[in-house]
Length: 269
Image (tube, rainbow, N blue to C red):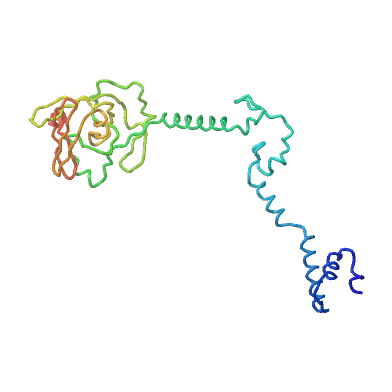
């Protein structure tokens, strides 16, 4: 009697009950009916979770059709538009999604950045602090492993670099700041150094900077070694081997290393 009163949507349940071989009590019948109703509710409930998961990527992932975010390629409004890539001369994709064009643009930006950076030159020199100022030996050239260029405080440049612009050249000062118009010239400087035999030998410092306001002549280890020279340091002394094999003495004074410049001696006298 109860099965006959159930609506047509319960027909699967009615068939299951009537075909059951075991005896069904009223309590078991109610339990089976409740279980059937819960199952039907789950089957008819909108699958919100699945829909949300399917829509989520379209909000973050770019469309492979037009390259914009907010939709997938299957929903792309530009799908009906004709595609044309001027780079590949192809209709398979557009200019906006062409990877080759994007790569070319990135390379152009890198080249442009390098060109802008190369317009301004930078040099790093010995930083004279308060403690070292009293120990500076102005009768010689300070050997500096951190300097990128030789520095002379007197105008002894023989071959001048006419492309050098003081306003475009920046040098690091004693307090760590950088400033332009410090180096006035750049060129090859001729200096006289004392070798291990006590003789004066003439040597040329390539691309030296002329900085009259600097308190000390600087011999750049980096600049010298890049031009074929070799240096060896010991605890209290050192040696500079020039390109022609001449060995020049390096003296240690107050934890700093110096090359004896005879020209400086004569000027100070």
